[in-house]
Image (cartoon, rainbow, N blue to C red; front, side, top):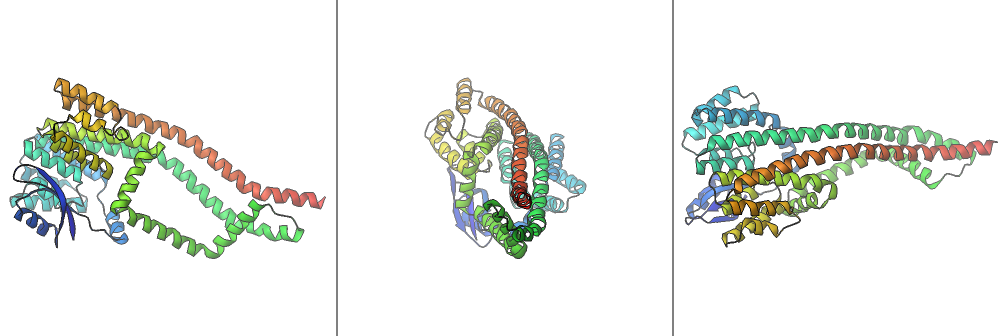
Length: 403
């Protein structure tokens, strides 16, 4: 298996690369034999379609993670030892996968493994962002504060995701019902009118012929259509697991106008929040950028932040390093960073940037929903008009011939 790793050398330099090994533990041992302290390691071997389908079905729900993270923060804030905290959480957690993961983490803690390493062994449950923040907190000694931040952050993301999902339910239901009715009309109802038109010698417009032909094709070859759709879905899902595919879709999120308006503010909020927390915990800027790069969830931003980290190590300011990428970091971000650097309150400025972009995300999401509903009604109206126009025009010609 092939693993991507992030490690520290004995001189404190960050190192990223790939290693071949039979499993995760073997890969960690190989890196340790080269005097590297492993910060993060993950498999890059491509899963097949059915493995990903199984993982998506059995995945821990966001709601369960919000509850777990909030309880973890409360217990750590009460100065309860981490071993007792995990045992308490294991007893209170009902979700089977999360409960089992907490038990394994607790056992690893009892054997002397650090919390971040124990969480990393359960990488299918805990995100890279979660693990990176815990690892950084272990370095600075503010684990309870990091857990509280993760609880707030997880809840905030959950609320935003729920809001986006709720906003899309109504359009999705309407479009689904329209699609079902359209298929019934095209496949069942309209073909019954075809013999009437043929016997009356009515000349059918091209769009009516296309509609009736589509109905005949779907009625005869529906299984093939479903098979092609299923194959396309599988191909796209497999493509998204490749380096090229992830880069393509990550770039699409940034370049598509409608998606960009929400994705960029959301990413800036996440980036600013995470970086502020790391800097507040005493992590150097260059190292913090490397960690945040692995938590943003976008390969393009990961590469950009890696380059920015290198330029910061060479003596360039953070504002200058990020200002090189205006398509990915709006002008407001480097401008605010200049203020933070000049006043020595960079973490406070980043928190303000995060709050600003969080509000902007909510505002743009509301605007998108307000715009989407009338556009959806217009689209459905045009499609319904097209469907019935394709039949009403020949019917009008038929009645004209009868007169």
